[in-house]
Image 1 (cartoon, rainbow, N blue to C red):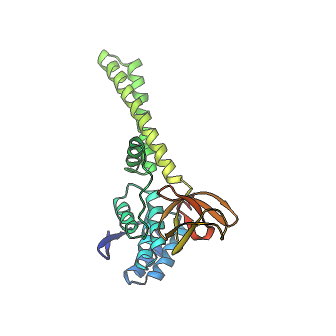
Image 2: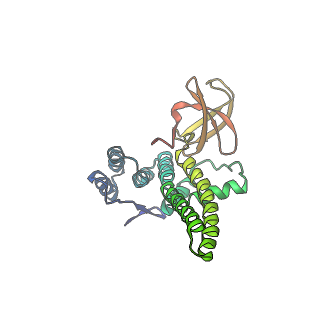
Image 3: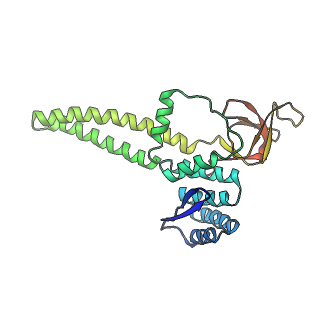
Length: 252
């Protein structure tokens, strides 16, 4: 693994062995501090090879080094959506997000909702699906032992083991659903314009509600007349120009 110094932060450029030479060329350009070229090559690699967490991670690192804070936040978010279990991605996303201009407290969630969200990020969606399949298999084994076991002990193990596996299957499926929803959520976006005025309606002459800056995550609600209605992290709702943001999920 190759580690590169990102100001006060060590950022690991992910180098999957299956990637074609375009990604390797991008890494070489990054190491030579030619960040514009690295951005071009990483973008090309993502287009050629398909979307990967590693590709978006590398692209985000190059954007950060190039001074494009909004695009760095956007692409770290994309990498995190694909693989929320990666600690380097999570750490660097928190790092770059801490440097944006707007610091807004998010609308609080219920504890159980926060807990399920946190647990769902322990593994990727693929891993949760595999765990679900494993527990379903254990349920089947438990049923088999209960009905076909040749001893009382085997039937008891089948009964209690099957019940436990069934409960774990239900829990894992709930978590897998949260993980799926997180990976495929299509409304969250990152602001990319340096300064954006939030309007009370989709009209340039409408009342100004707030001023926000690039890198802020918002939830898109609807679009009308060249404007998009968004919800800010603190719950404020208003309208921004359609070209001032980009959706995080661009790979479904």
